[in-house]
Each structure stands twice: as structure tokens, then as C-alpha cells.
Amino acid sequence: MTGAAILVPGGVTATPGRLRLAVLCPHFEPDTAPTGAVITRIVHELAALGHEVHVITALPWYRQHAIEPGWQGRWIRREVTPWGSITRLHPFPGTDKTNLLRRAMGFVGFSALALMCGVRGGRVDGVLSMSPPLTNGLLGWAMKLVRRGPLVFNIQDVFPDAAIETGALTNRRMIAVARWLERVSYHRADAVTVLSDDLRDNVVSKVKPSFASQVRVIPNFVLTDEIRPLDRLTAYRHELGIGNEVVVMYAGNVGFSQSLDLVLHAARTRPDVTFVINGEGGARSALVAQAAGLENVRFGSYQPMSRLPEVLATGDIHLVPLKTGLGRVSVPSKTYSILAAGRPVLAAIDPGTEVPRILDAARAGVAVPPDDPQAFTAALDKLLDDPQACLDMGRRGREWVQQAASPAAVAGAYEQLFRELGRR
Image (tube, helix red, strand yellow):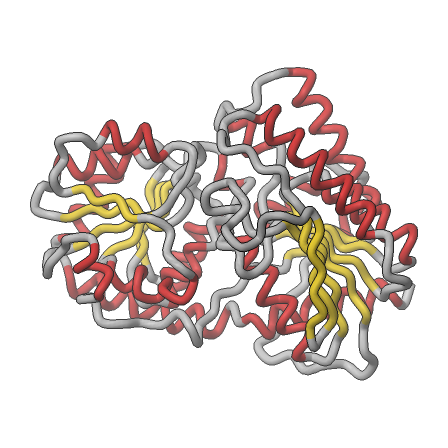
């Protein structure tokens, strides 16, 4: 590694001089998408540093892939906030998450509105654009050209790699177009930020050598004040019909990137343990059908962000299963939240990638190779048979994440990056 990565300090203070920033993101509070929670907190932390921030995002739609009640009726909604403004746009959602063409058309519609709104509002000191969708790279570039501020392109998941790895994208022409759009978007930015060294290596392999130093690592954070260890006997257990028994939980998107068949395999081998799959997504209905007859499997739905600490406390052991090849293009942010909640992690993910490194550094869990039912159940059995070790892992994970991933530090790193780009 070169010195390109930004090292996030433990306590960042504001630098003199107020910045005026524009942020383009697919989700923002009160939307429930994990990336929405990330960018919402970054914006609030930037505002706390004294900066003016103007957000362009979609109307809330993530949970059911339909615009939430109370937000319908207008394609564009704008609200003024104490720190700037939020402009919310119609996302043209499709209920079938597996239909990539339909989703692409929705991105086109959203992009047209975002372009119209994004280039208005006057000069800024910087533009922060979040991907996916990848189209936000070119939208951010248009905002940069018109509003005269350097562009930082934030990559949460590397697209199209994740879609190719899961088999969701197989058409060669569409892959070629996506690869072209990816390269063009990277090179139009003044800097590209990614969540881990793995993702940095991925992006660097696709850009010109002269641009490699502009690919920076700024990790996501966890809300350690809000997400904290709680008593395991939660009200959410009662709602799911669970008592005092041991709970192994997966909480997150129930999609095609997650190897949730591993959870059902483990449930068949451990009828004495209750397994909870908590979330929504395109793979949920098929998973529910596969779980028919498994009395020790419960399915929970998305809960409000205010209940996230309670949901995490419900699980005694948490799972992070990601299909083969995806560990190098995606960093499940749920890992940080689980550690903040003081619970141990069992990850099934590519070895040598970010999540195994985190678990090893924190001594807060176990990582096994992806898509290996035998290795997965063997590791789970070992955790289940040693409750004290699980408690110790949870305690160490909490201590580690408090030191390594605070929201203020992440926002401070973005502030420093924009100041650096502005001096060029």
C-alpha cells in the first residue's frame, strides 16, 4: 500500500472556514436503507462541524420498493433545514428487485430529476456523490462542472462486480456498458472513497496509474452511542414468539448476495437453537418456502432504526454470510453494528478480506470460507458450546469499535479531503 489511504483520527475538530457542500445519495432519513443511515449521519456530523450541506436524494422507498405512505403525490419535495436543505425526488421504484431492466429504467427517471435539481443552487466547495447507483458518478460530475466544486465519489459497493458475482447481471453487452460507465465515473471524480483496502485494490486495478493515489479509504462508522449492549430478553423476542432460548440471528437485507441457505442448513442440524432471519429483500419469499417445516426458524421484518439496538440485542450470535467473491467488492456495514451491540459474529466470507480482518483485530468472532455448510455449522457449534467465549468476544468487539469507527472521525476525514481538493 502507498500512502493514499486516509487514516481516520480518533478525535477530529473543525478546521476554520465554513464549507458549502452538495450531497447526492439514493437514500436519506427517514428511509431505512443502511447506506441512508450512513450518509444521514455523515451529513449531520458535517453540519455539527459548522458546514452548510444541501442533500439531493430519493423519497423514502427502500423497505417495500414503493414510496412510503405520506410521501406520495409529488415528484419533487424540498425542505429547508437548519444546516441547509433536502431535496427529495421520485425514485420510480419497481417492486421486483430481480428485474434489472426495470431497476435501470427507475435509475434513469431518478437521474433525470437529480440532474435538473443538482445543477441548481449556486457554487459549492465540494460535491459528495454516493454509489450505488453507478449513474450517480456522472450526475456528480455534472454537478461539479456547473457548481464548480471538486467531486468526491463514494463507493459503498463496487458495481457491476457484485451483480456479476451473484449472477444477477449476465448480459455481456450490459456488463460492457456498466464497466465503461464505472471507469468513466471514477476518472471524472477528483477523488474516489471506498470502505476498505480490498475495495481500494479493486478500484485501483480499473483506473489509470496516475489516478491511483486519488482512491482513498474512509470506512463507514457505527453509532456507538445509540447502538450499545442491552439485555438479551427483549420485547422483540416476545413479538417473535421466542423465550429464553439461544438465538442465532441474521439481520439485514434478505437478498441474493447473502448465503442464507447456510442458516437453514444450520437450523436443521441444531433443533435446540432458534434461528431468526430479520429483514426484507428479493430472496425472502423463496427462503420462507425453503424453511417450511423448520419450527426453530423465525422470520422478522424491518424495524424502525430506533429499534435497531433492541433487534441486535435479541440475537446471542449474529451471522454475516456473503457469497463467494463478494467479500472483495462489499463490506457489510452490519458488522460494525453487531460489534457495537456487544455480540459475537460468525462470518462466512472470502478469507483475507475486510470482515475477517476486523474480527481478527477485535478478537470478536469467527470467519469461515463462504458457501461451505460444513465449516459454517462446525464453527457455529463451537460458539454455541462455549457461552463464556461468546460473551468475551462481544465485550472485546464493543471495545474495539468504540475506538475505531466513530461518526465524528469519518465526517472529519471527509472535511479534510474536501479542504485538500479545494487547495489544488
